[in-house]
Image (cartoon, rainbow, N blue to C red; front, side, top):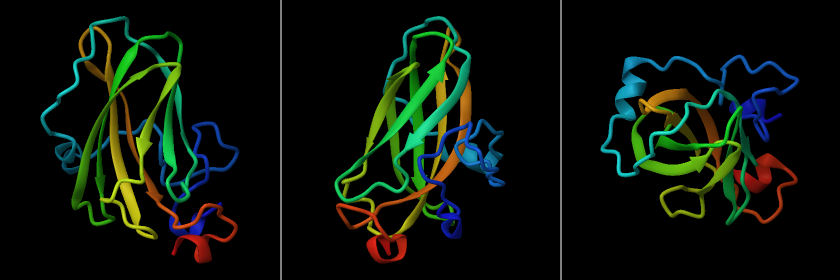
Length: 161
């Protein structure tokens, strides 16, 4: 679904199709990608148990007009983690940094009515989930997304681009 844009709807780590790009999966990021995430952290995450992150769910992809994206973490324990993310264009030029405190076995919301995100433009989000007693990276990866200019999405080409 949405493969023409290298984007998959309602992306979940256990989807029935194989996403060859490994979007929203726990993967090693390159040194250049990690450098994009090297910005000053402003959110404190208390030292807690280190959760075993089983998967994340990111939905809906694509979001419609004035809709937020849910970034949900599924793990073996309930504790707080920090989502550290950078949004770039597809040439990896940074557009916006983001930090959220998210409970594992819970979710955080990324507000995309934000004026920094244009309709019909594909963005890439590099992210890390940080937590545990050592503030370690628990999960990291990337995913592509775009924002549609419509309340309902019936046709990606017409409603989003």
